[in-house]
Image 1 (cartoon, protein in one colour):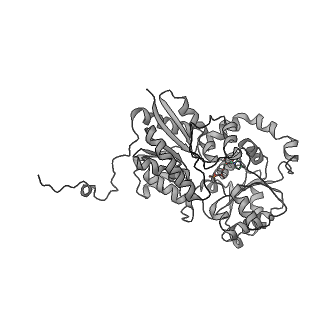
Image 2 (cartoon, helix red, strand yellow):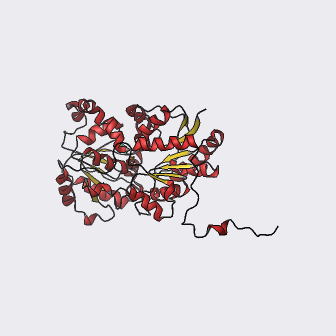
Image 3 (cartoon, helix red, strand yellow):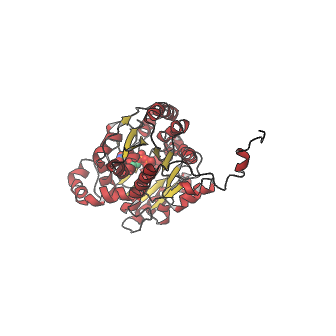
Amino acid sequence: MSKKLALILGIRPDVIRASLILGMLRDDPECDLQFIWSGQHYSDNMKDVFFRDLGVAPPDIELGAGGETDADISSAVIARLAPVLREMAPEAAVFLGDTNTVMGCLAAAQLNIPIVHIEGCMRSYDWRMPEEKYRTVIDHLADVVYAYFDEYKAQGVAEGLNPDSIVVTGNPIVDVLDHHYYGRKDHYEALADAEFFASRGIVKDGYYVMTCHRRENVGDLDALKAILAMVGAAGRPVYFPASYRTQKIIEANGLSVPANVITVDPVGYEEFLVLLVNSRGALTDSGTVVEETCVLGVPALQIRKSTERPQVYDVASCVKFDPAVPEEYPPAEVFRKVESLYGKKWTHTLGDGRSSRRIADDLLSRLKEGRFRRHAPADYHLDISRSYRGDGLS
Ligand code: UDP
């Protein structure tokens, strides 16, 4: 009889990153995969288009846990996930990343269902970021953590996590791009015809693509104003598929968007990849986009004070703009650096293209062998014998 495994996802990059893992788990007859969608992202262009573009079968269960605020969404995920997990009683509940959806791990914790965290032990050490708090919480609740790199594992161990619970896998975005982009390059070249660029008011290799959605950037008006001023000095058109939250904040505060910025609604994955690979570079605060540009050989400007993905700086695929101190990053200097990356070659260190397989295989062997429970407490417990003490009376 097959055993149940719950995989809980809820935002656009989750589908992208887990697209191959999902297929591998579904293909194994001994795994009864229950793919649960939280509902954090729900519109066609933030959700369904990614299932279509990546050939991923839609979720088995939709929680519909939306809301206006982070508190609304995360509490709805917990409240709606708990009865589903109780009834399902999976061998483990698998989460990915650092979002409101990941806070659903509290429902699994309350039910004492083993928790698995993919993309574990990343740290920006920027405590203003809700994402940093979320990933710290789930890493410390998890029974099994998949960390992309040895340095991430070391970060978790330094926080007291048991090294035996952390499996180093490499970053699955490499496999996703190998499969969906490099494996179908002709398709992407055919999509990038003259009409594609003309209809968007841009010229191949003559524009930047921009994304901007992080709380510390769009939730702080000074930061957002600094970002808009900086991209206004790009000297090229900036094609900006803007998240709905960002669009709302710009509108509600009457911020003026520079004339060279073409704002559109978020686009699907194929369209976004065409935009990226034919651009001059990406201006972004997205974690996933800087990984993708690093793999695809596209220059990037990271619009962030700190990053949990320093590997992109190691290979010099991107430069930085810190919106908290814009005076330290004069636009002319910033764009001179971005332009200097154009046409440069670097070798990314993000993975060998087998990370999804490694994660899926490890999950499947644990599922079959019933090995999801947390490892016995390790040496970092100061004196475990005190916790198990009895009074000795008979
Ligand atoms: N992306 C997309 N369409 C867009 C903007 C981004 O397909 O209009 C993709 C992008 O290629 C990347 C992911 O969405 O794979 C990034 O999502 P986001 O920036 O929302 O999340 P983060 O990576 O910061 O968690």
